[in-house]
Length: 231
Image 1 (cartoon, helix red, strand yellow):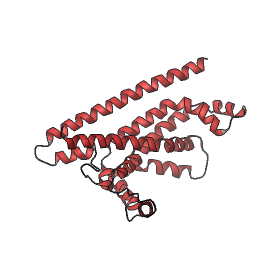
Image 2 (cartoon, one colour):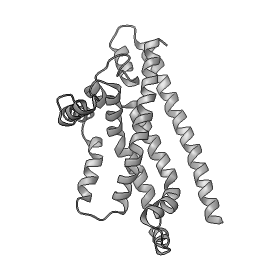
Image 3 (cartoon, rainbow, N blue to C red):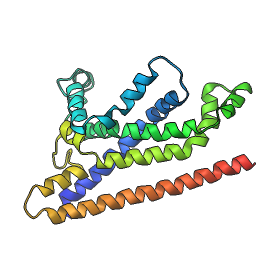
Image 4 (cartoon, one colour):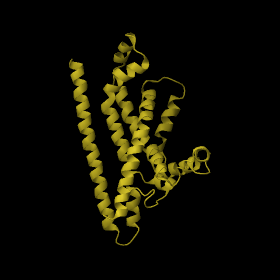
């Protein structure tokens, strides 16, 4: 492949990695709120979390541009106080990918939390454990397979995100051109089908590799949890 194509692959991996890592703590917290919380506005929070799944990706990208662009309220504040620019930068691609992948992550983790018997958490609380200790010692070990599944889903979605990314950060080679954007660019030029097909193959290989690793990790976690329960 051309150096430009390899650059798009590396940037996609970088964007997907940071989008997953940075959104994972927030995803676990929000999933726990939705699964266990009983508060006013819970339905609104659930709707906001899943909104990127319903809206067209281009609309999500445009909203990000309005808010986090250089003239947007948050974007102007970030640039004025910290000199940090998101629009038309690879960091903006991380934000767009994280926003689009967040609902899939939260849903997978939320289902895992809801599958945990609340009586186990209540038993730990009656023994004097705080809410943080209950979550860290009881809930989190039991939901680790779900956390891994959510992280892999988010990584795969971030790798394949196109609409929101190209709207928010454009398609600048070497700066914001991710794997899907590079495939799109190659398809727009005569004779670019071969290069696009090679990038498609790379995308499929990365996705299959991520799924294989997630299955392996999930089985190891489940085996450890089962061993603790037997003990």
